[in-house]
Picture 1 (cartoon, one colour):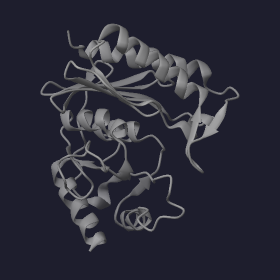
Picture 2 (cartoon, helix red, strand yellow):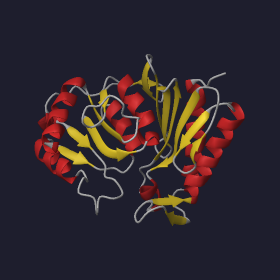
Picture 3 (cartoon, rainbow, N blue to C red):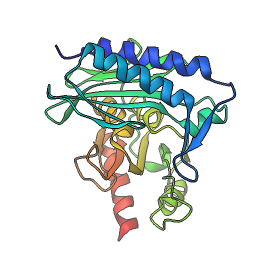
Picture 4 (cartoon, helix red, strand yellow):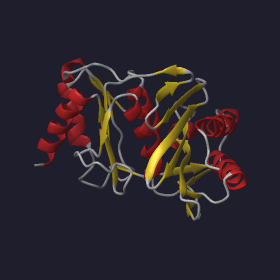
Amino acid sequence: MPPTLQDLVALARKAGEILRQGFGQQHQVTHKGLVDLVTEADHRSEEFLIGEIRRLFPGDAIVTEESGRLPGNSGGRWYIDPLDGTVNYAHGLPFFSVSLAYAEDEQVIMAAVCDPLRQEIFSAERGRGAWLNDAPIRVSHAEELVQSLLATGFAYDTWNNPSNNLENYARFARLSQGVRRFGSAALDGCYLAAGRLDGYWEMKLEPWDVAACGLIAEEAGATVTGYLGSPGYVDPPCSILAANPVLHAKMLAVLRRQTM
């Protein structure tokens, strides 16, 4: 049997509790890259999620940040980010999440993102809507960039890669009410879905970064594409642009001009 949305919510909540219990403590930090961190909490959360998925849905494939791709034969696939916002977490900054998405036939159909410190769980099921805890959520109605609060993020190689999003950031900072950089792509997309942000874009992501928050934003009324308008934002190389349809078109025009 495939999972239900309630299964995803329950798993995200339990993994989030693992992170909540460890937050603010001294962490065992290792480096995957110069500024790409991983902590023991990443591993504990991921071990719990993989173990429960293998126990409850043994035929499903899993795509996860720390362990890579784990094969399956059921046609179901999970995308897991056991701790989205590791740098924040390691520094004691209270903005991080657990992100889960479930796909069938290459299409994400359910998603849950847990912010354990605020006890907020964002969720969505394709064709049925998006929710914050038990309340339906919708994107904002902002139609002009000057009315809009935006969010973005930066890749770990920003310091040595000329394709680093800094020019996009500067341009949108001059066109909008402001651009925030919170450090958790999953929560950025969910805040967009809940109307707390009006637009969100980011380059150089991974499938586990955007699979859940992309569906949640779509089901909340956003147009969600790659940052230059491609439809497959979960397909590597991943990027994302999300906003209500009117603002999405205006943000897309800015990003396309920037690349010309």
